[in-house]
Length: 104
Image (cartoon, rainbow, N blue to C red; front, side, top):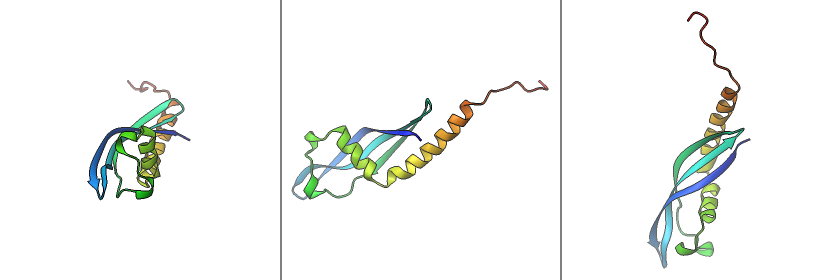
């Protein structure tokens, strides 16, 4: 099974109600690694409306905070499935030995 890492590339904010710099959109990469093989998927996520009870001011955010938000979105499940499928193929291919064509 692959390990997955989310790296936040960019954040986009807007003011909402009485809150300023609310993160509304994030660009990120999802890196999947297994058996020495890695694949990187660039993606983005819309964050929706501010969570009034759990709001974190923009300047207090950490990459882990945002990565956790992204990970909580259903969007990452599809990306993780695609990455796992691609990695399974890469791991399988890494066990193959190319051969010259016998008629060449």
